[in-house]
Length: 229
Image (cartoon, rainbow, N blue to C red; front, side, top):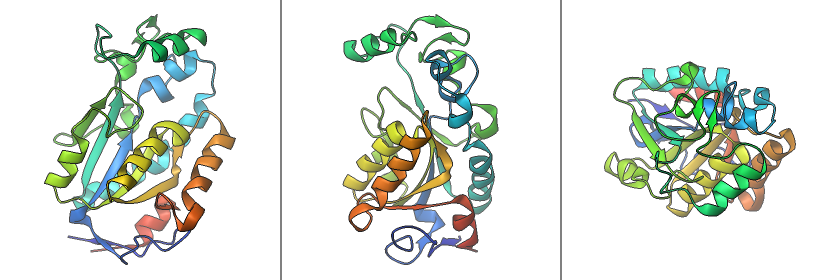
């Protein structure tokens, strides 16, 4: 068992309690799916630069290898809806249609944001290893309508390190949900990305307000440097 911390982070050295055992720390890999960071996926269909959402992949892949070597719990999430779209809110579908990427419609990677389609799958660079937890979620936050909290508490997890896309939407929503549930959270600037660089930067800045209102911000290098075995 290893220990992580204190990590050089903003606005305080993470975690608040000095260090976290790797047995009680989980790495969250949020929505690294083709639909969000691959050619022909949902984000690409909306006309955004997928280079921005792919920016965090190299650092995440390196941190993922580090976490696996430590035996940490790794959790992957995928956003998507049932094939019959019975769990797709009408307003979410309507918004997606307005920007030319209607959820459930056919696209280059299959039906957009639908479970089981090629676009819904996690990209190869950070694909789950056998036995790693995968949480399928219908919304932005990974705790909403899922068993994520049960999985984490069953494993004795108290500290979370967050990677994924997008920083300002699914990652930030999940971090807020986790903070409200008492988890000590760290979001990694080089392991996240958004469809707009300004939104990415703003989302990270929000975390640092009020003494770390949702937790802390650091980089993958900071985490690796602060790890002992």
